Amino acid sequence: MAPERLVDGEVDGRHPAAAELGLQPVAAGEHRSDHRAAQLVGTEAGSDAVITRVFWPNACAADATAAVRRKACVRAPPIDIDPVEVRVVTDPACAWSWASEPKLRRLAWEFGDRLRWRWVMGGMVREVGPSQRARYARIWPNVAAESGMPFDPRLGSDGGIESSYPACQAAVAAAEQGAAAGDAYLRRLRSGLMYGRRRLDRISALLAEADALDGRGLDRERFEIDLRSDAILERFAAGLEEARRIPEQARAENATGCTGPIERVTFPSLTFVAADGARRGVYGWQPYELYVEAAAASGAGDAGPPAPDPLAVIDRFGTCATREIEEVCRLPRAEVEATLWALARDGELAVETAMTGSLWNRV
Image 1 (tube, helix red, strand yellow):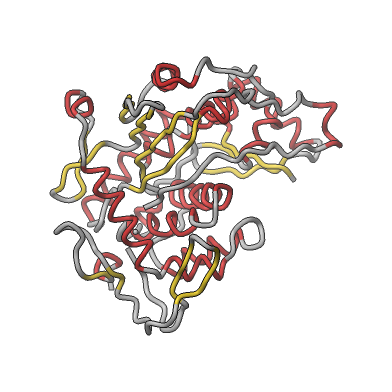
Image 2 (spheres, helix red, strand yellow):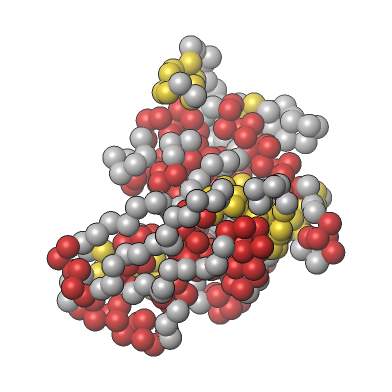
């Protein structure tokens, strides 16, 4: 059964209000004072849902053995101001959102705690047909060339996903466990779809991604309970509605797209919300400078601290593409690649190659 058929009912006349997962209703389980979820009883099924709360990690992991080979992992200094909220409308299956990761990671590095990130799953495509798969196969190489990020368009020829909605719901479910868990899981979804050729539109595949993070900030059992819950589905419906409220600025810039017949903002769309409620939008694939201008105009102050070295970036964010390190460090690509390959040769970094790029992480 296609994932988009595993729901019934509507929210505001458009969106699923309840997941049809073959589960027997039982008493809710208490996770914490502000979180309740249905206990899982029944058979496996897919599902369709919004990520409402994710922040970039606050801590930098120091590696004393390599300290002499890199600068300190310095973050933007905390200042006594209200952080600017950044609402990012996106989808794990959106190629341009993946392409924008270098800019968003640089923004997170330079503004630190002065920005508060909130990810909204906008639901790029409810049902993927053959024509859309062919279109993605044509578009992804162009996005790879434009962005420098790793892509592997063969996912489409392998059959591709039938819907991006299940991955959206899974991102929401992971974010229920906090900033680090939500961010790490969303990143796994993006990388799995963009270059890992993993079909992340079935509950078994989504649970497998959670297995990889179990014990490292994500509770896999709780994740499965949340993934099957109506509450997550309802939050996704709220995200769909947010994506479909198109600001005048976005419409004037022709920064709109469609999910089926329904118009929405293009992905990724960032809205910077100042302390007084004023909003400034940056829609779609844009130069980094526009993000900085919007952040500063919203009260986040000036960009800083100084550019880090490659190891500090990896220590902050985990696995990084070459292009991401290049962007955050503000170094020429040739210099970044030479440094990374030298660190890999010395056993400090592991490298993963994709069709259009490489990714790096600590050994």
